[in-house]
Length: 279
Image (cartoon, rainbow, N blue to C red; front, side, top):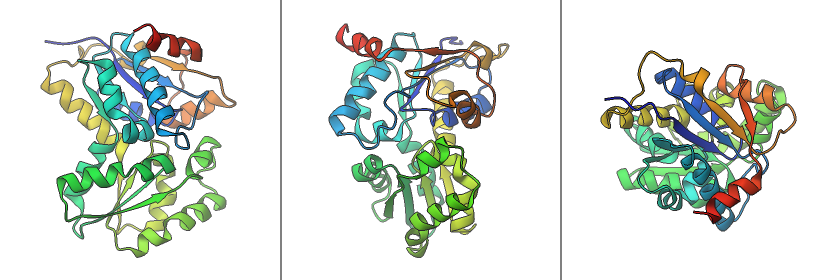
């Protein structure tokens, strides 16, 4: 039995397109509906109450599109408000981007020392540490806030001397701590993979949360027998929504997903709020 309904994915901006890219790699026949809250990006510096409110609004918009699965591709919302989002959408399965990467790291660490990099809100919520230690309490987790990584990616400055200097500045302490796995705790960070790997050396394995989140979505849909028919082009039928046309949006989106996006629509913020109020 198949299920042709779309998969819903949201993020505070465009970084969640790295998850969409991995979804299409694993399941090219699946239709995706993506919402990037570009008007309010980033969420990382907001209060928990504001993050919850934004996450609930984003989820409600995608729920209104009759989705079969919801992926919270925002590490900040996944860290702070995942349960609130689950309550909002009821019976729809919900995947955050925290736990899939944690499970992958736990199976790969030999030294039982794992590093996590992310936004301030993600690191301060200790969501990765809690998830990892719920699986194996003996693992030591080192978190590091890297607030300049997102602006570098948004500006397209990923292979520049400035970028390498910033990466080295943030990560030298983690390298010295003896970690052997490093979780990229933000969906923007895969675009900095080369600079990060070059800084930490090949001894430390990078865990791409976007890739492992897509793998979990693949496993869940297979278990539910809810995959789409194989004879369709999922990308051609997918829809991409944003809350503001930010400068260089199209170029940035293409950089994240690896291909040109044509079907982009604007969703006013008051429409998102009205969906929650009217529910």
